[in-house]
Length: 219
Image (cartoon, rainbow, N blue to C red):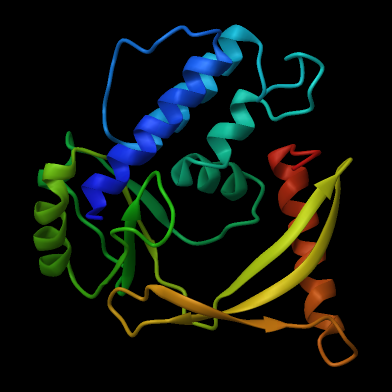
């Protein structure tokens, strides 16, 4: 399937879920964008007191604010920066400021404000390349963020938050394609044993500070 076909399929699946969750109330607006439908589903779940939120049907879920924190990279950055848990520079690029946008610290990394899977993520080396790349992305009609590029090995983290406590079950060393796109194409598991216990403890300690700042107690 093409990316567009996949988005359309995902939209239909999510629409079916919305129809069921909201007692067969159908969305009037239809857009083939997975992130749009996810956020609509969150809103509908809130309005109808279903699934996503603690007060819905007695099920444990997350708040609207936490749902936004987990999907909005700029909001996520702002909250952690205020708590001094994120020290890099980060700015929002929107259609309203794209023509006059200037960034001074290169290399930088450009990414969509919403979404996952390294979609449309690119390392930018100078202002000219930034202007050119943003012009190519303008037809997408979505917000982007640009932030300082941090070098080093990337890891994925598997785990859970239970009653405010972080439990890290696995660290995964990412296998990325070369710059400028650095797409993740695989992982190498890092087992928790004597040689890696310090790494696991360090990650758990930092994530504990992060979830405390984000006010997430279960997830």
